[in-house]
Image 1: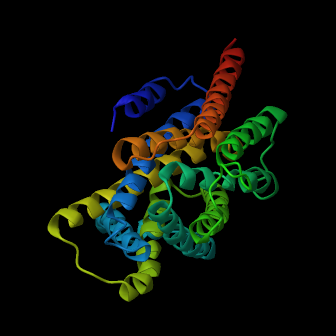
Image 2 (image 1 turned 180 degrees about the horizontal axis):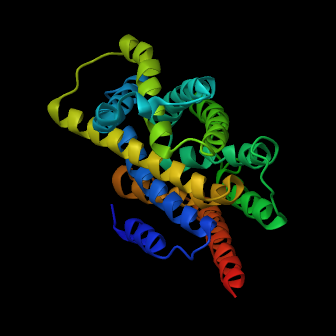
Image 3 (image 1 turned 90 degrees about the vertical axis):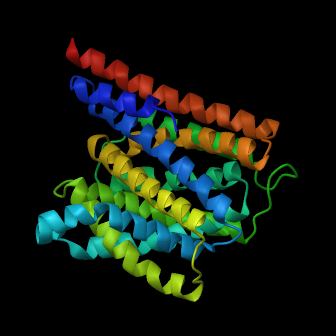
Length: 308
């Protein structure tokens, strides 16, 4: 892992004059990096630990990380007026996590990430109709251009694309579930702190992951146990940064920023698993990067105009 996203976050926090969407974008970049390292570990451990079992260890590690906060703050950290939304988010998120882990284990990292971005198709309309955010044409265009880059890379139905089998269907289903959880999170951040949302997600996620783990249980080797714990810690960091980014910025504006993890995972797949991206993959990734840079640049320009 590099230090650039963390440094960028520090810069944003020291300069409150930056627009909320710019600061949110920096948190999203940090989330993308942590997520990419986590999915690399998911694939690396996939031959010995099924997706449901990995999900349990990921949730258990996240719960342990947050346990000191739970012990110090007690019941206050579980204070909520809408528990059923939290139950729905955690159940959908746990199922989505199992399905996505399965896809990351069975598919090249870049391809699995490409399919995961189909949730953008759902995030924009859900942000408009559920969260009631105002969505301008530039934000819609940025999301659509980024998704066009994904389609360019995947080229579904062509001889150069990958077949739509069980792993791909699992990722598509996971993407829809995650779009629902992200929208629910945006609703909850209006009157819930990120800590409360993290603690609820960690607690319920661990509980909901137990049945799947029981069916596929095996004790890990010591080295694997350390990697599983690291995977869980990165998962918690991913979620914390993502919640913070979505809390600060608009959901529709933050969605394109998440595309940068496609570049991170493509690099990891090449360096660690000898997955060589083809020309269409590289072209699609380029479109994704351009759309991400454009939305960030656009928000910075708007922030400068607002300060004049």
